[in-house]
Length: 282
Image (tube, rainbow, N blue to C red):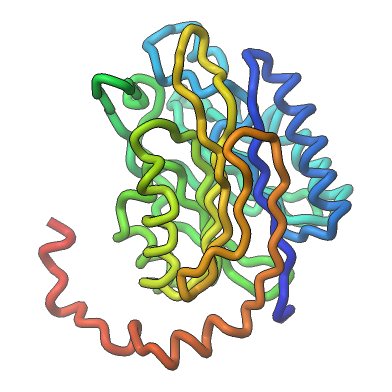
């Protein structure tokens, strides 16, 4: 097992042009690899705008299969760069089901698996509308983890998922030492952004990387994505953070030798009481 793994989060603005977004994403992934990153994560729906601000059938055409054009291109990039790559997109299955999905690609370009967003929001406030239930079915992959050639196990939780701590604990109990959280978030959630990610890191004694897009990419919307992608260590301390408005590759060196040591010292897993937690599943 490598004790230290260089990781990168990629935040970027997008346009209503999938090909252009894929090219920009590839450019930033290659920049991350050139800086030595071994695990790289793009933002939620990296190859499209964030379209669920409105109900518009034309956005349904943005969905594609996995493997499909975007995933296959990212597989080539991962293989050429020798990295583990998380490249979230809008997925359409053979059966016609639509999911908000994160393909996870290995260093050899093979698809290690996928995680489908579990919790699908319907948000309506005076300042924000989010109609994801129109576009996405609830994920059916469960809380899957992924092994890497670097000897560490990691997981993916997508955007709104982060408001549900139960899944994070499920990942940790399966041995995940790192969680990446690709998002497209704006507005009222800003004050919760670091708070929730730091809490997940502390509660589960794992590294957490939250990656959020930047810019305004929805036609006619005044909603600004606030970026601020962040790396958090297992004690809840912020390691590194991106700006709130620029495309950026956020790199961090994560020392995974500290995870088992802190878990042993703090005893959170040892002192759990599963016999009392039945109400959580109701």
